[in-house]
Amino acid sequence: MASIWQDDRSGNWVIGFVYGGKHLVRSCRTKSETKARSSKVLAEETLQLLNTGRLVMPTDADPGVWILSGGKVEQKPQTDGRPLAKLGEVCDAYYKDQLDKAPTTLIGENTHINHLKRLLGEKTVLESVTLEAVQGYVNGRRKQGNRFGGKVSGKTIKKELTTLMQIWDWARQRGCVRRPCPVRDLHRPRKWAVKMPKPEEPQKFMTWEEIERRIARGGLTAQQAKELWKYVFLDEKLVSELLEHVAKVAKHAFIYPMFAFAAYTGARRSEICRSLVDDFKFDEDVVMIRERKRRKDLAASTRQVPMHSKLKKAMKEWFKSHPGGQFAIAAPLSMPRRKSRSEFTMLTREEAHHHFKETLADSKWQAIRGFHVLRHSFGAICTRAGVPMNVIAAWMGHTSGEMMKLYQHLFPQDEQAWMRKLSL
Image 1: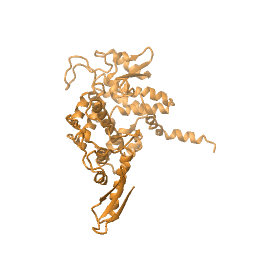
Image 2 (image 1 turned 60 degrees about the horizontal axis):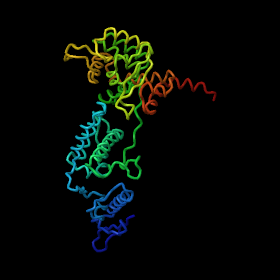
Image 3 (image 1 turned 90 degrees about the vertical axis):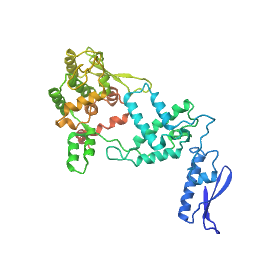
């Protein structure tokens, strides 16, 4: 696609290539063959991106200089007399317009927006953001560390760029930008134009004993050891022991039902907070769970889970002393060291986490990170009990079969028993 040669008179290397039906010749401005060959590779890569439509040359750019520079000459967006929309302004306007999204989704998008502003430039004109700039964002994020001492994962970067594409589409619908988002490959809509780091296999859940062995070997920072507990799995025995502990030390009557709800249904923390008293249908032995994640076309949806006998007993006892209001997990209006309420409202995710950590503090269970451990444990216990995968997915509101695979490795003793049955 391109060729180089050394000029006899100046000694500089020269590059030649064809673009737009014209043969262009430009000096590499170096006497080093190695540097000239690097320029040749860069020019060929740029030509390939131009020919496939993944890169667009500015109308006022010198083709030879622009291609030789790898497309680094700054693009000047066309304005048609309209004010240029800045990245930061568009991001802020987009975020204010997201009225129907779940709080957890908004928190994540806000984090993504902060990274986009920081690396792409809050005052950067959105129209001027090129594929090269986005690739620079990806490369820059890969070099940064996360709060656990490791590298930022490709999965995290992909989520951030997904938010960028949503912002771009939102801005394009409102006339803030005219061209498609450079993240997408125009010729292959399902493919990304940027080169993303290869994804790592998701971390599998581990037994309590396995985590203790890893920590005992040494070589982990305090933060890395703490992070391991995020993936702990509790078997039936440990779940029972945990619930017994909660029943003994809980400072408020609603706390044990909250733990039991998570342990016997695999409900998420936010789902527990949203649940209503009428969601527990004792005559039918089912509990309805109000979810926000599974159906993207609806603001909210529900699923039903058969009610475990122990959960049924715990909730019936709790409802006898329920303080009032519509929510199943309701805190009293007045609690020590807490601001008094004038009416019964939904327990927030932060309040639920506070009571979780306070209840398990100063015990062996304090290593558990949050309610998600009980959710993962419920899925693993169901898997070992032989509950079909599609049924578990329906109970837990899973949208991906990949999540279910994380449970299957937890019981090697079962697989060994199956292996012994083979007559090889």
